[in-house]
Amino acid sequence: GLDDWYNLDHRISNDFPR
Figure 1 (cartoon, rainbow, N blue to C red):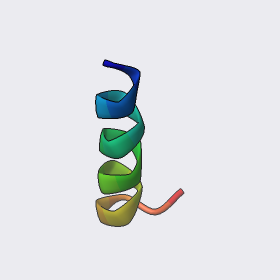
Figure 2 (cartoon, rainbow, N blue to C red):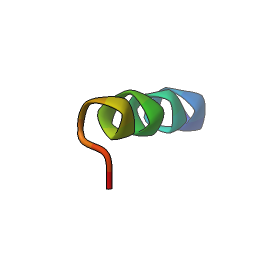
Figure 3 (cartoon, helix red, strand yellow):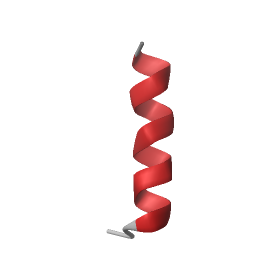
Figure 4 (tube, rainbow, N blue to C red):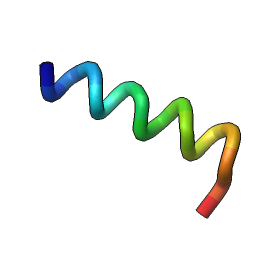
């Protein structure tokens, strides 16, 4: 759900800082 994408965004940002 939207929460999944929201969490993925944070995980990805943690690995790949913008």
